[in-house]
Image 1 (tube, rainbow over the protein chains, first blue to last red):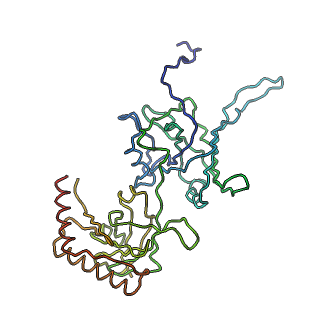
Image 2 (spheres, one colour; image 1 turned 90 degrees about the vertical axis):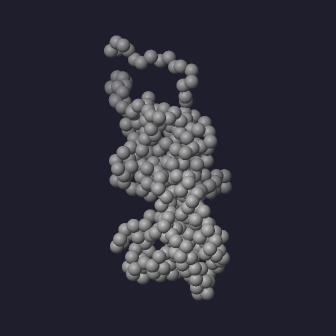
Image 3 (tube, rainbow over the protein chains, first blue to last red; image 1 turned 180 degrees about the vertical axis):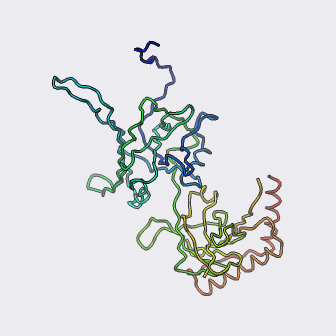
Amino acid sequence: MSTQAIGNTGIPAGAKIFKKPVKAFLVQTFDDSGLRNDLDFSSTTSLTKAALDALVQNSDPSKRWYPLPKLYDAVLAKGDPVLDTAGDGTNFFIQEGVRTSVFMLKQQDATLIQSFDTLECAGNADWSIFFVDTCDQVLVEQVEAKKGRPLQIATSTFNAFYQFMTDTTSNNITVNFDFDKFLKDGRLKVVEVDSDANILKTEGLKTVRVDYSTVLVTVTAATGIMTFDYGPLGADIKYKGAVTADFSLDEISPTPGVVPGFAVAEGLPGVYAITYTLEAQDDVLELTSTSTGLAGGFEVETNSRFTIP
Amino acid sequence: MKIKRIDLTYKGGSFCFTVNETKESITKRVEEFKKHLDKMNKDKVGGGGFHFNESASTVYKDYEETKKKLLAEK
């Protein structure tokens, strides 16, 4: 290739085009160990259901994919390029414009906005996003061979706000952000997803909060009310039907380790009695979700701890 | 993969056991569990409404069978 030539422009049959974005997954750009949360295709050619489930239900929040509800009116528009216009009208190209993203999550509870707080706080972890189109294709940026990188969100640009219902429009959460300046359009690729993964219907984990304060904790048992953040004020929706397989019970201090055996019973909906072997005064115990609980779609909040009185 | 725990679920209650339980330890756990639920119902803790009627011998039998099955699978 001569130094003046561009790349060849012939396109083989079978090239893939990313269609209309209708789904998105938020993910930290780097996990807590500093590794990128890229999709690795060195030993596979599509995203399987098992792989997708493992990403959405990952017990490590820094590696987890966070699916958003269906996107409406998504526009991933690129701004005008920056040009230097000389006095005679000649334009000199300086740099590409910024690509922005705007979409709506229709008919959602405003509480969902709380989940985005980390993204809105400048200086917090870098976040990225995988968009999915109407044909189950995931949009990635290929920077390294056989690795699909989520599209990085520019720091301090993410914001989400609630729009009330009007006479002609439904309520929605509008989400805006800019893409990172270094996103290269020419590196955009699609990843195919196995049809049985049903990626467009994928839901995120639901956070379960445990309130031990209003009832009873003893050396052999605790009673907790488990609820979600959603529902009418004072009547949060209850987490019903949980069993021991959904939970792990651990001693946090003074001797960290698994509490070897415990039992769980649900009385009134969402009210759980948890019994365990004798614990000492001031021991701190913590209930967390097992992989079974996560696979069921629920995660007990971090710091769901109680102290033996 | 090593089995670390055995979970058994019944109507009204579920148990997480270690792999080293004995008939005596399971019987004690089940009976204490029932006693605790009875007390909670009596005192109306959390509103009461706890109902667990499985016998300790049934739980022990299920534990042994489940453990055997899990060990055979590994």
